[in-house]
Amino acid sequence: MKPPLEAIVLGRLAHGHTAEELERVRAMGRAAWVKEQLLAPEGDDPAMKERLARATLHIEYGEEKDKFAALKEDRPFRALDASIADLWPLRDYSKNNIPWQERVRPRDEVVAATWLRARYAHFQLREVLVGFWHDHFHVNALHDDITIAVTWPLYDRTIRRHALGNFREFLEDVATSIPMLVYLNNRTSKASPANENYARELFELHTLGADAYLNHLYNRWREVPGAAKGKPAGYIDQDVYEAARAFTGWTIADGSWSSEGVLPNTGEFAYHASWHDPYQKRVLGVELDANAPPLSDGRRVLDLVHEHPATGRHVCTKLVRKLVADDPPKRLVERAAAVWRDHLKSPDQIARVVEAIALSDEFAKTWGQKAKRPFEYMVSLLRATGTDYRPEPALPWLALTMGERPFGWPTPDGPPDSAESWLSANSMMGRWNAAFWLMSKGNPSTAPDFAVRTPDTVKTLGQAAEYWADRILPGEGKEATIAALKETLTTWAPIESPLVPPQSHEALSGIVALAALSPEFNLK
Image (cartoon, rainbow, N blue to C red; front, side, top):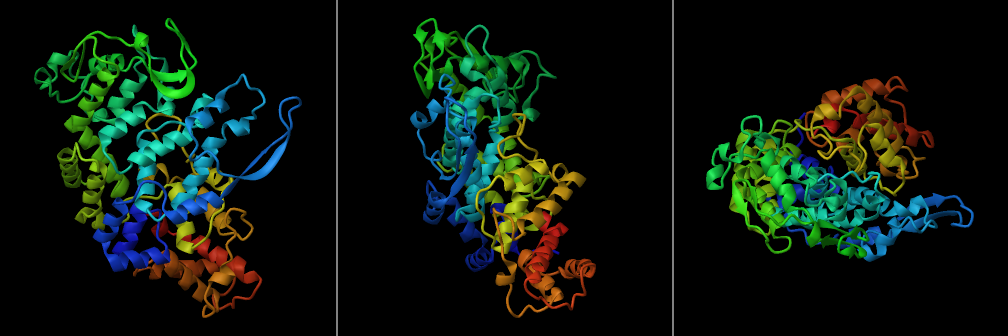
């Protein structure tokens, strides 16, 4: 089957369809819906803001004598909008009266809010892109250094603020964010020698991409085609080393000792002049003068990588892969990269590129060339069935059984974005278990009651299969899927069997879970 265009739009530019949103997209048309989504105001929509204000997340720990009392409560979110002044004390290990669960609570609240926003937010396209950018500028929030978990709401707000904005501004806010400074070790990078971890990932992952790495061909910057004119075809190790020097002294005010004394301990980004390498540098064929003003060297590097043509190609390839197909259509990538270059200085650079991709012919004609990741699969099932969600550890744990841990990929390249990575036998078994658990009336996170939400006109198992398959798989051409679903139901009971309470809920939830295991529901 091939779903209607509105279902394709919501399958890729949202976390799946709802019955109401299908009608909205059908009535508005793809272009108008996309434009509305790209004009999302900063912050959550009013209904989402209210839902987050009402939400709670469980926290529990035992007593530790002379340190803290036992606690067990469902607590409202407090960290999502918290300042660094509020969060920073949680990382202070000299305060042994703070349980581990309290220290990591900021990260846990962001995880819970991510699920809620994916399920309920009006501006769904922004939520999809927030996930994309978290993968692109990946930081492992489960890193050993508790600083990352403590400051995770700040990093998430950085990602959310720039998800539709200008990439150059995005780069600098990521470079100066506390989690990135910790994760890629730039917080301790000092002159002689500089730590190159952040600089290397800046080139390889965040901007020009691995395809633009030319060290297997050239060893000196002058040899790279175009470098003598300040327009090199790509980058080599010399560029990484020199860029690393440019970012020395970009650190955190974390109370560290230096030759100038002790840094403040506020958790803010800090530039420490005595750690910076002030001498002349050359990056991508461009000379950076010695003794430049504070931050100038690093900012100039960010300018250079943003303006390099390879960056547009790399990021646009990833965006097309995310929104269209595992094998990105080359012509669409080229058109998206041209929009990227035309809007290098535009405040909505990213939004312009996403619009070009979302309204392309390729977008509408390539359904089925993407697979839902575990998170997307579960949220789209909640949305398609109209099932509510209450934050509990069960759903993130289910995602983990399928290989996806929210904000927890172990390497800086972030989780893969291809079907083969998420449709293994183990992952599919996890989807089977997840579908039945999500649709179970006993699930504390969802507790759906399908007996109430199935129309009275649906009288038999066979009619229920038709109704819920149509709800979950909008569009024509699903006769074979419905037939297979009915055939499976005959192992339980004849499809003419009446729906009789209280067993009807169990039967209906099983039907919905089986429909969600169809190949059509797992693709987008």
